[in-house]
Image (cartoon, rainbow, N blue to C red; front, side, top):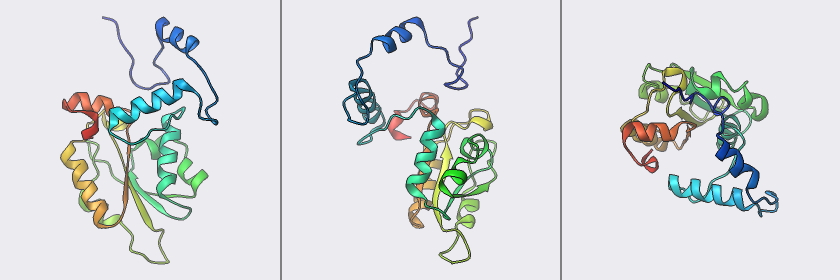
Length: 189
């Protein structure tokens, strides 16, 4: 049986047709906003996920770093799992580049964080603590065996975050895998 390796975009090999498509793609300057390939890809990604816009990043690590830094400033904190990709594999980028404090909680075997743990980890507005700004989840969860976070859990975390005025970031490197596993449109996740 032929094996298709989907562990990471860094080990997935492009087909000859993919290489040809890249070689012949129309190009432009991304800074000037005139690269038709990037514009088309970003519009497609936004439409597929039900968002008003999308941003092409060269890696999931960069996407997660941008996602955290959009919501957190220096000395502020993100609540995330101790087995999350952002914490475990991304070289401490949120701290090194953004000065953001990672407040880790134990990931459950199904990739979730306990709602009570999240709520208890939220720091009050107090000069002695980094201000909690963000809850970060991962779907599917890499170090939890590819566990898929269910929509009801995501909604519950969203409600908890809203109650405390926090944002939610989802590392969605494998969000389409989660949508297929749940037989849902990716917009629902």
